Image (cartoon, rainbow, N blue to C red; front, side, top):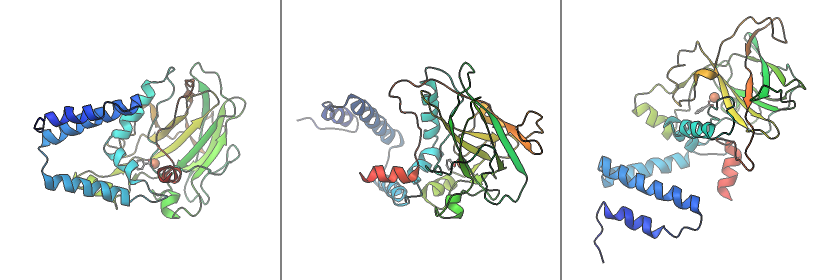
Length: 301
Ligand code: BEZ
Ligand code: FE
């Protein structure tokens, strides 16, 4: 019998897990154990700090509800979701438009709307048109692609926050036409603070961070045989465009509101964005993140 110390326990744990039947589970857990042990050694974690960490993770779990996913938020503020997205984009066999965070406010089943519809129930500010095309990576238009859009109000809150999940607003689903084109109306959403009233927000505050996201419109785009694209368009003149708390902004996703003679709805200022979707690999799982409702149901199975 060997006495294990803070170094040799790592190999002992890896050896016990060596018969894991699922090779991917084996790989992921072995790396997780190696990195966690190294992390504990690097910071010389004390028993009190270890308990504090476990209490923090417990609080993260307890903050989850059918409409709130605090674990996703934690992953977002630590930059983990952004790393997963970047790796996901790199794995594509064809380079489409860049991904961005799904975030915790996506909901399945938003109303299907006719092209050009206003997604905000009671617009109180300047209406904008967002328009463009969805095509494959060679520029061939993708007809009947499903575009799911969601955003905050001009007050910087999602319907899940303003209406407590009881009804939907500021979201809508559209289908591209035979020419791959889409357009809809909206208001410029306000940049907002991520939910700061839970343990993930408390961590952000303890780190002296502002907790803000720049103004953006989320889009989730799917077309037969193509990689689903989870992304967002960011308004370039927002004060927080360079310091997004959840690291979702890329240069290629920054947009501006303009007078646009090519907009299909004249009389409004417009944002134009043309999306490209790569072909899907067979059996590829595309989506990054989850609707909190379906996420909670899965966790209960
Ligand atoms: C969002 O964009 O909806 C979001 C993303 C990450 C954390 C909080 C909100
Ligand atoms: Fe958002």
